[in-house]
Length: 245
Length: 55
Image 1 (cartoon, chains in turn purple, red):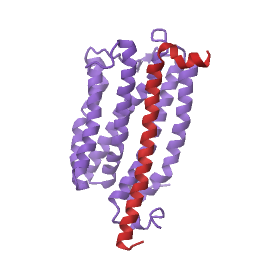
Image 2: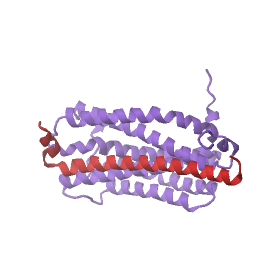
Image 3: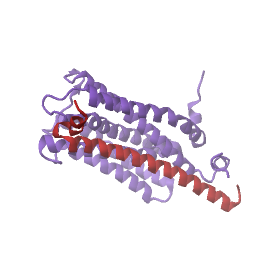
Image 4: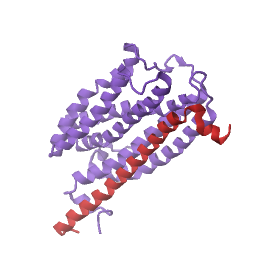
């Protein structure tokens, strides 16, 4: 069966598809959050060095990974919109930005609450922490720049440039613990293997998947509003069931 | 492990629950904002169409 993928690059068809997809991401996200937290708090053992405080890792690492991953997806969509002039890609980039910023915030917040008992400081100007803070500001910059330009197509192009240039920061965050002497620890999970307890890994990966599903669901709901807003003068919007009185 | 012990988190209750509590709160706020935006957007589109006399 051949699926015409280009069909869904039109906002009018994607609007309906996105609406149908939301529960398929939202429900598994909720289930996996419960399972992941259960493993993290009731199955995973206490850490030999950090005691119970280490349990922050189960949300800190997934949130940090998502904050970087969503940025690259956002920049990718923005670049597609810039190169091929496709409206939907730019709308997807705009819809991803707030959720990406949210994960960057959660990463910094949970990191601060972990840093205080372990390092004795909420915050240090270490390469890993500083570059993650810059990531949060890049999200804010993207959102603010897009909002400050009235013409949505011009806003898309300007914000896309910012997103593309800013994506240099993502590998800097990722490799910062290798390139510089940071207070932040290096990766526990490496390609060569890990010393992490299997239940700890299960909790972390379950919550990573849950966060990803959550991000997709919430982005799809948001992009539907953006599509409606920007396509409000079209016939298909006026014919929508939910718009009709 | 008792329930009280569980909530104590070996003395790290403030940090562990502070991390998870704010994360949960952030998710709830985002979900509320996104569904609120959907409602207001639909309302605006409806108002615009009404003003034009199309609906």
